[in-house]
Length: 486
Image (tube, rainbow, N blue to C red; front, side):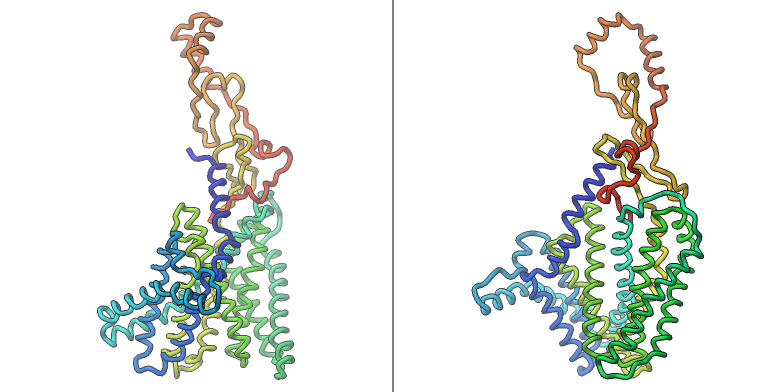
């Protein structure tokens, strides 16, 4: 049976192999910068040409699909050291050498893109009606990408929050939902007010524009409404979480991050619908949000893949998975903007992006209660020889389950019981030990031996709480000992 200490060791090893720093280094590596520049160039080119071509949305949908699929194939190639070497730019003496090396590193994904696009255009996308349907399908993915932006943020931030030591404290506490809602609501009011002052007063003053206090007062009201909606939907899991000190800490921290991020998206929607946003600020904001979305999505998928023992997502191919998401996200924005041209409140890039921000904010509110429903496993220090799971009951709010430790007489026969109640067989004694035992105690009849073994099996093991074994009076485990459960 695999012990808890073994699983935590595997968890730590996986975290060391693919942590946040490793992912950032992989995404920002100069050796693969050419692939990022190709994403930017292809997105800008498709945005500029789609509306100018007859049936351009259909061809754009096929090209976007080919680009994203090519990055998936490239990610599979990059899992090996040799494959990654083919896709990386090695140091060159001059600009010309690096340019040639960059173009060479792009040959494989470009080749994949061409083969996939030609195959699609000659088969399933040969007819114009099929391409039009394809364009609608890719544009519709914008809703999924916008909702996925919220879910990837939830997965990354909630797991990080659950890893804090205080969130594993199962001490019972008093304090109901109403008190929590008032305190967290006041914090949300401060966050929304700060955003309103920034975009409604400070930035317009710097740009020489007229401030819009009434519009942004409405934004504050909308943010509080979004917060109230999320608390209402998650009230069942929230009440359960508030019964312990650790659960309350988790609920509070996750509420702060969740609804602050939701308020930011609500502000982006507000500026695109009720005011005239600055183009430079808008593009910088969208670039940052797209990068954050791709980062959190790849990190969550990579962490889960490595925890499960899969090598589909690694630090070698993380960039190419991110680029596959990036092509799909950019393509859906381009196609939705083109297909909604002429419709009220749609047909422009700011309007399309504003709709995406609204979907993300709403998804965050709906998803707030999810992380509160997952139990937190409190670890036991495996260095003390304790095996099995020490799970704290989140409803009872008690300490970890006691671990059975055998006494001296029990050690002479069968092995100790583990935390699951199963008996671990004792190691077989050597012939010399058996002979010595017989000489010391005389010949033992079969009936006497059976009674002796039965008496030993019926002995009650001593129960010692796992917290005492883990380190004396210290009830809180170290940060490194906390296992995250998705």
